[in-house]
Length: 231
Image (cartoon, rainbow, N blue to C red; front, side, top):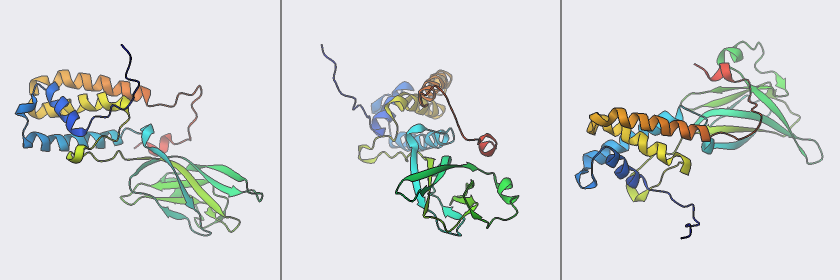
């Protein structure tokens, strides 16, 4: 025998729901519209919970914003959960970009700055996590640009829908955690006797997924954000 030679396994949400109900002991002919409605809610609530457990590396991207002299605050996509590394870029005069890392401030630290409109080299940013989030810079960009702000951010996992054979916004290494997690949630409504067994499997699978969702580097360096992101 030969292997498939493919890596394209990507089940739809509908297929994952059928499998999850099977783990609860509910066979496909017994599944009703009510089952599907509850699965829709359970999937999206689970993904919302996973959004709280960031950074999910597959949801990290790089954003670039042009800075304007005298403008401190810049809008951020509402799907942004967390800002990771941020830096501002300028041209050295010969067409070569020069990047300078900037560091996060808490709301209290920003409030304590005596001159919030001072223009100069940007050193810090405050990420205000409102429904419409924003980044506020200090110092405020001066007139020696052009400058750009570049930052890596974590975004929300895309919503889950049942229509049209939609597939998940997850990497392959997270499929197992999704299936067991969904089964455990649905068991509370449809298979109470199975909750303990399914939650144990779900927790083990989720821990395995988290262990692999890391950057495999010999040295881990992160900005000093511990106090900023902890409640």
